[in-house]
Image 1: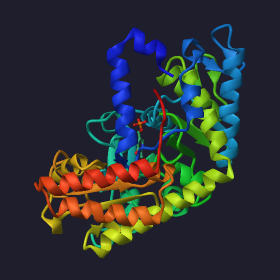
Image 2: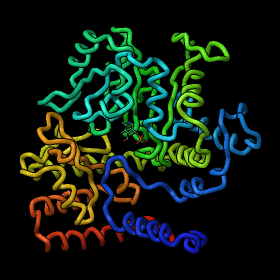
Image 3: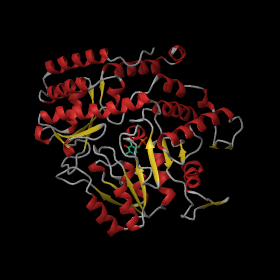
Image 4: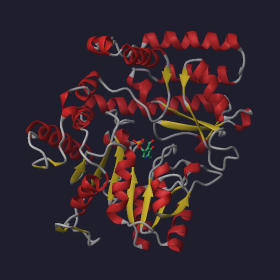
Length: 430
Ligand SMILES: Cc1ncc(COP(=O)(O)O)c(C=O)c1O
């Protein structure tokens, strides 16, 4: 696959080879990562990367767009089918780009936006002061109940009534439970706010019909395409029901009639230039895969695996936020084990198990240290692993975390991790 690259740039070739080995030979348990199919990889590494295609299919600012129009049209149609949406914009380069364009479809700089507290599982783009969201909008945050670990819907309602946000964004990066989009919509309606769901994490599980869809309840839905949805790195915006533009938004060409037109205009020319058409082609391929029965079975296994791992960890006295999971991820509070997230992440990495340190709700450590780790099952499930492997891996995690600094345990676990990886081969690429 890489014969030309090997000759042209041996250093990058070598880094890629090393990364292939790392992905093949370690247990990838970062909840936001997955392994794309070879078909998706091929669609991404091809000549459409050469093409400028500012605009949208049929209405481009460049000639020669017939074939890239085919790719983008297929991606849009498949996305609409997958999520039962009226409109899909598949051009966002990332989840963050999707979010900024979605915000500006209903709000202007200085407006009040309500999102989930980053320390409780929210994402940077939901109002962190170091992100565009926190810098451009007046942010009010909601969080989870300290005792239950579930989103406190009473608190959401109270804050919304008091602060009267223009926009509420629901969705998270480290929340293990299903979100009640209908309840969020009722609150949004009571205070005259618009509702956006950011389903970057559970998108694949929603597409597979395993978690409830936000589409009927939200004004807009944003997502990444590379997590549970198992596509290339990128973003997308979905409009469930296209409606008249009640924002009164105009461009130099006149008033935009519908919310879909506003969304499209906010992505291009609003926040982006030319789309990454090779990535859009790969999104189309991934969406076709996600429409298959195999993907439904895969997604069901992702959840079964997460539940099996969560139960195993709880049985060894690990404290899980909300005591478990409905999704592909769990958040482990390590304070009773007298460990920080940073220490745990480092020790597990040495043993070939990749997770990320993560703040837990009401954490007393800084974001660089943290009291928790976030663990997910999408990538290992793609390799074909099931509940039996999850239970064994739970034991390996415990073995590492209860023997920090013990080199011989690390070596033993690393060797078992390698064996498990060989049993579930991933990429044969050279
Ligand atoms: C909930 C949520 N929204 C948005 C994003 C941003 O996606 P990206 O990293 O593609 O900008 C993430 C990424 O982790 C996320 O978890």
